[in-house]
Image 1 (cartoon, rainbow, N blue to C red):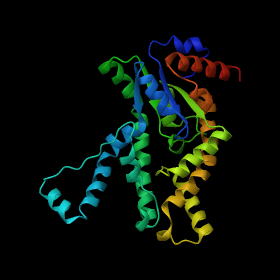
Image 2 (image 1 turned 135 degrees about the vertical axis):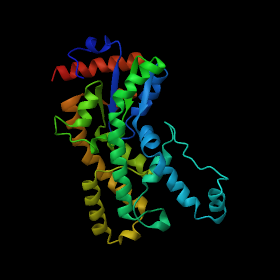
Image 3 (image 1 turned 90 degrees about the vertical axis):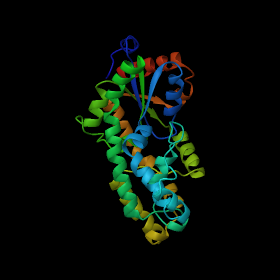
Length: 288
């Protein structure tokens, strides 16, 4: 959904915007801000972790619990309940399920099991993205929201083909939403990397990219797969990921949407600021 002028966007009786970019660029902050101003917040990660991967997540919890004789007995007698308390602000159950490859003694899982879970996430993310149109309708029909914000996963660029003008996921999204890429600048890229170094989290990767960096890491360190330090690997892979995703994001924005910088997003304090920024990015694209 591309607009010739800012006025064409602001005059929409029902505005819908989808934000994409690396985790940490400000997507969820904007979504939370607009939620307080009567925009419906559709979190793709939350949808993945509840509707599409809720059962595998809970089964993983139960598998761990079954290793304890006490918990096993209570589970088998239906005496306890184990569930996922995933929220918009706490996606730990999803990231914990995805896990990290490497040494089991340091919290790692076998690489092929890691790949299997990554494939589950890919299918779940595509399905959750395709649900966006349904939720736009549901937000209006059930809750009376006129405006809608899709807070996409940082891995959106991994489940679409940025060079395919007919990519089904992006076509479906662009049919009803203005698409805004939040671009990390070089200084912000280093900050994202430092932030990830402090708290390395499980991630979703394009499988070809993942197998390449895994092979490169094993060759670089000489580690056996089952001896890899999981946190050391994903820290190393994350810096490679920043370079991998940047061109994919930019190609998506050039074909389907608009671009704002992290600094511009950080300056947004309310709905009026956000609408003004949308006007700026629409005019910027129009000017070439």
